[in-house]
Length: 434
Image (cartoon, rainbow, N blue to C red; front, side, top):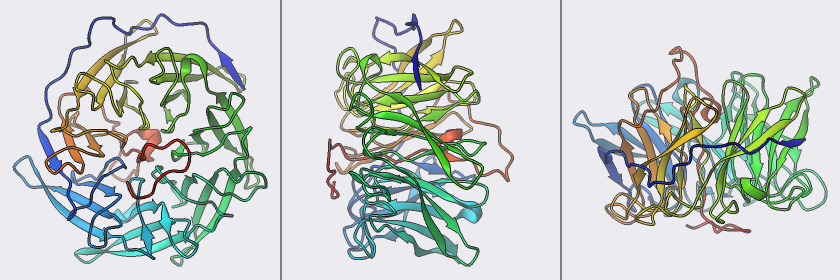
């Protein structure tokens, strides 16, 4: 159930927002390390960065990579796995770090049915051992796209597929769970299949909260036909109840690619790719109303100069600041990194932290990740040293990390320490080769 709040007097400044300082580290992707990274960055406790590239590598079908601090402020790259035709191909989503340092993710195609896979890289000696966790077959979903997998305390993996599903009708996407059996295998189950009125084409992954609720978006469908925000609530009997939190449109914008971020109060934050006042997308908030619904408000409308067409899932830090990127716009036209900081009177102050140019990268798709030093990490699909994507480390962003025990494995989207991966721009059927 959606309820609209009264319009807020939000602190979107009319003057050009001030820019923060420049990145203090970069890494340019190439055919050897993988090309065209769509997913975001995952960080471990040692400061290593992990991610995927959707092309390149030994077989041209994408890679999983690690960037290890080199002790002098830079990074040393290692390709942990190169995907191969007929096995798994084109990892558009990012990496999730699980217990024991195992890495998890998805590929858009490949597997036994050609509909994509979920995979695992398990530490083994000085390297990693690759295994396919699940090959999607259409009924269990088809073409997992941008979403980084979420993992719970029991090791269950959650995500979405862009198409397929177990329900009748249009087979326009599914939410799935992969449950470990303790013997190295995983059982797949479909938690919800989208049919159109409840949403269609979920590009993004899911956000998992402490109560086991799942949150996400669909690019199409819903009451207005331009996308939805949704929640799946455990029903106590092993199933889930679907709720359309919002049918998007109007000031909140249209057609979200990214998923939802959740703060400690259960408030949801998302970005739309189009629509809004200027047609370039918006940032919206969905606040619980206390009776099972949500109050919707628009926090920021993109006008081109301050960015346009956000794709990545937003990140909310420990003090309620919102961080994200836009895929284009800004003073150089190649996208922006931004912060929305609470202003103390119910609004937010917008700051552009970085305006991407071709040298720093172009078209940031992947969601941001932040560390305890206040650095933010971003990948871009293009640009950089070789024109095939770039990673930047941005210091002094004001990002405040959650103070988690060392034994805690954070849930990527809900705790904003690891982030969902992002996608190739496409309206309907995505292209799998960047």
